[in-house]
Image 1 (cartoon, one colour):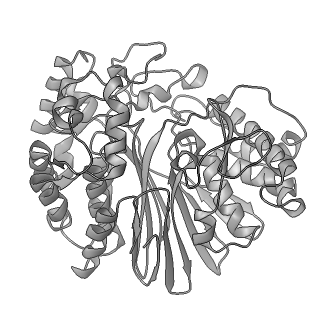
Image 2 (tube, one colour):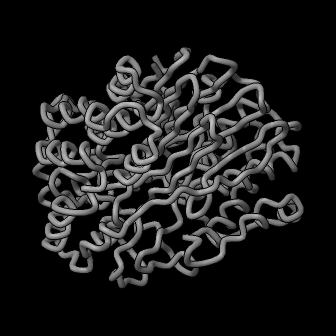
Length: 482
């Protein structure tokens, strides 16, 4: 079921992860319990997208308000590089933050069940294995020639669709994490990871890079779109780019004048996208290392002036990022979590069945240059919208395209009056830096891609109206809403 309606719901990019998450409700758990179980399951089932070697963000609507948490990883303290030219460069590995996010949930008692109970099914999945689905099989096939790491090739290199894969070393790590999530960063697990990373040439990694790592609870940034209040993750996330883009679309009255695929509308949409992305590439970085003028970038006066200008700057809008997004909701909470390695299989480096990220490849120059203990401009973000009558959460796999994907789905829903499932399934177009404009529907000079295509993002969404949820999993992947 790509869409479903229920009073409790789980949505993810893999059907089995959704089932594992939904079972948590039957055990008496809440949405926070379900999101951890789903997160762990997705880490195993879609290891090219995310996992214990990657990072994550959380945005949740709860009785105490909107909660946001940044578990994006930082660079090792001794990192010394001006820029990266190869996305598989092992030096792009940052300290992973996903397990820290799980720790944030349980240490603040947002969960109801013990973590050992929550992770029981994912641990069984890692120990006993599963049969590789089409999405993972395709990712393995596309990645073989670009990955040199021998441990990756032992684990995945010969695998094809329908083959059995299991992770015995990762199962043992998960058992320890289930007892204490901080054990991933302090003690035997991290010490062993650092030893093995050093063997792979990463001499700049130290145990302290793990031991001293903490994510942080952050304040969501806000904007409006018509009668909706919008929330996004603050910098170093690119969430502000979504808010800028949507506000400029509103100020320009773009959607009041044209049909969605009208050629003039698409052209103007692309121009506004370039303006929003130009600000992202100029300003967004780790706010601990440089001032990010959030209030200025979201001010109506600034954006009114901006839509009168134009941008010829080259923007970063690559097609090759990979992520996964998941949502769990119960009577009181809507919990959204996005987790990633960045590119498919990240750096390609595997240690103890853990695939490590290449998030450092998101460092560029200027305020976003690589520095020790710094977080780069981050592609992960989550859109939450509230007009008091209903609430929406929209997220996706999409890398640098994410602000466009969030905006288009939201525009379909608000301005073109599609229900949330229709808004997710509808054809999209994307401005990219590799292919120019691509589109699932014929339009002007755009390169047409076959509908439905994951190249325009894989969206998961939930709508709450009164006491019922509509959950939607994109038909562009093998997910499930349940």
